[in-house]
Length: 480
Image (cartoon, rainbow, N blue to C red; front, top):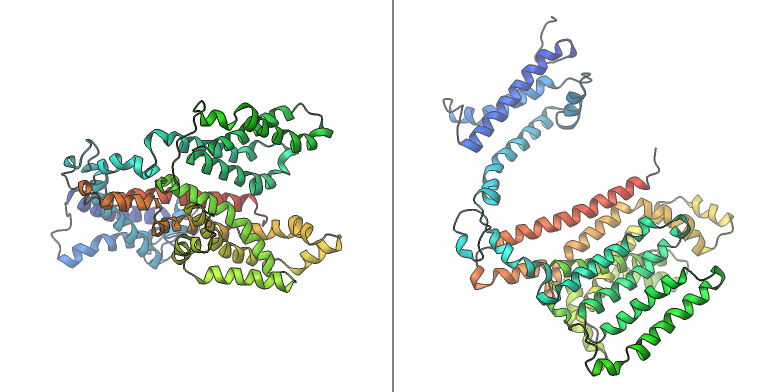
């Protein structure tokens, strides 16, 4: 055996250093674990300060002993590379581990061990843990707001249908993949808007929506049997004809007025709320703010002064005012400037306001990507005879958008987390419903459970979006 040097561990006596280090680190964690979970202090016989610092000292020495570069042991190299690169990082790693262990007992006690979930009144919540009964009783309102219970299937069906339509791109064949951008940027948002607004709202106007859907589905099914050279004329003429026949011949309005046809119950947007409203606002703002931001970014770099300065004015205006002010203006001030016989629903005004606000940020993110491209890309495209739009669609934007995926994802995440601000105009998404529920006299004192519940939901949504953007980055990564 070579001479041991505990100040500078090396590979010559690696297993001696490794076993000694692991024992010291394990002992330090065991002391903290025993103290946290069972209130047993193995070092109580020592003076107070030494007893307090001993786990940290033991762990620090243990990590020092196992800090051997290129040890040849894969697991040890991974540990040293990530949490034990130097003495300061070892100290921070131990501190984090100890804080986690110390925090676990009270968290487990509040979340699970002493929590209450049975029953249907707050009388069961007499312990020191969380009252999940409160969440259980209010769950329906947190999900759907004040939407009537008997009609909530319409919200569920809308989301399922839109999720299905949104996954069509994964099943598209090579022949139709070139149309996917048009589908997701133009067709899908329009379908989503009519689906959510008319189907969830209901009322007599629902029939117009139904006629459109039936006409579209029938046209698509029949369209498979139409020869290719007639398809363009077919899709221009047949859907409109079917819609007119359904509306004015087969299910004409007289039948509706006579009550032989019943419309879905009308539910005003003021009754929409909860997590479903969070999804609706986030979804529409996401799909509308991106194309607006894209055109603003191109406009800001345009050579035409009018387009350039209008784009700059739009971006700087929307970036220069707080979102809460924009929402207030859209809800209170904007209707004053409309003609007397003109009405725009408050939810629609809010979605337009948030979309314009976020579009300004998206525009600047995309402009960063456009400026990152070398001048040679533009010159190469022009040398091939490409015009402005062809050059940007086929050469510039695919490269620029790939560069700014993290920035766009960051803006979208901020948008989702900004949705609770719509409470200032009287729309109660999930956080608004939590604020309403916590003021109920029968359920006072359970605000913490509500906010924890909302935090978990927002974390799941934002983490899923973050992972999706990361996967996109990896998919379109070209660096080697």
